[in-house]
Image 1: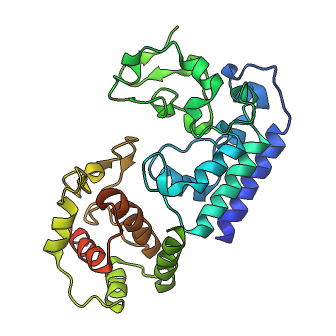
Image 2: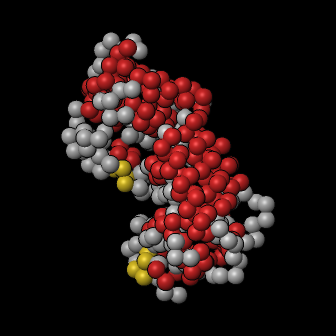
Image 3: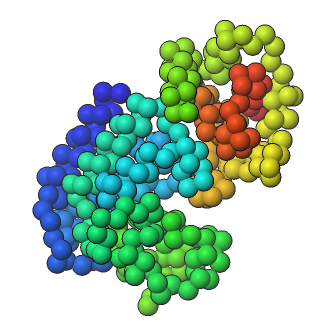
Length: 182
Length: 123
């Protein structure tokens, strides 16, 4: 267990080193690399093996930077009813993952993603005002009525590098549909 | 409930079972005198409130499953095609806790876990 912890902190150290400055001016659509330097991919993708194993067992490994820390806190406090599923963890594992998420989400964040959020702590990435704005033009047949996507929560059905924190609009490829071109 | 979960998993970890047989030994130590593979199979396929294990794991434990909600791939449950299964007592107990609650609306008792694991480990 100590090894896992050390590894996660090492990952965090890398995040800090590579993405420790804030920028509101750059458009995140152009990718993390431009906003946070060439090492930006590591800054955004989840680095904790424990988080990846425990949470990635059931769903894609959401980069911790996609929600503010206060949202992760709420999510981790309600794992016995995790969007209708039971995702309970033993207390030690739960605390370690929460600690990782809080550190990772607060160190490097998609500032633009949290625009107009105020003090709100949404439980879903898909509820972020910026997220809603970015996805409001997509027809239902590509998402809800598309058996290979079904929900905007499945980031990687269209953003195939989502787990690495890459959401460039030019790279969107909608499962069962093809390249997105608006 | 979380505290109870922690105790169950802590107990599993302390036993340090390394194989399905060892985990079944652990259940035996916990008072299970007889296991019944057929009873385990019945539980696996039993529909409860329109849910069953097959909802996510599929009809054949030797096939890859798919999470009913997220669509995430679930590796086959049968050790004959996925030898990594049931090597960790901690994992066995974690998934029994979560998935019995989701599927049956309650935790599985030790007898039920022993029966299901007996059936699955022979697949």
